[in-house]
Structures are given as C-alpha cells and as structure tokens.
Image (cartoon, rainbow, N blue to C red):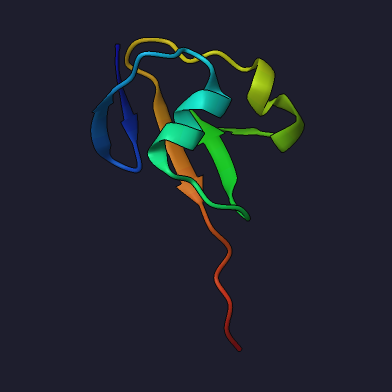
Length: 64
C-alpha cells in the first residue's frame, strides 16, 4: 500500500504504525501525527495504517 511520510510517497508492506516507523528509520525522540491527529507513543503498536494515509514525524528542535 502507498502512504505519505513527511511529504514522501512510500510503499509499505505492514499496516502497523510501529513497523512503518521502524522501517522508515525514525529515531526517538519524535512525535507522530497520522492524518493530522497526534498519536501517543503508547498507541504506536496498536495503530493501523490505511492506503493513502499521511504521517508526519516531528522531532524536537533544540536551541536557545
């Protein structure tokens, strides 16, 4: 199935969010929005992805 991650089209095999994040190479700490909705880290393993979904990975920015 095809989804979008951070604006890039990606073909995935697993429909589980946690697998998609691992395969994409996401490194903590990060926040995840699925179709514009924040997904708590405790829900990553139980959240399923559907064809055409959009995922945004947001990393904290450090600075002062």
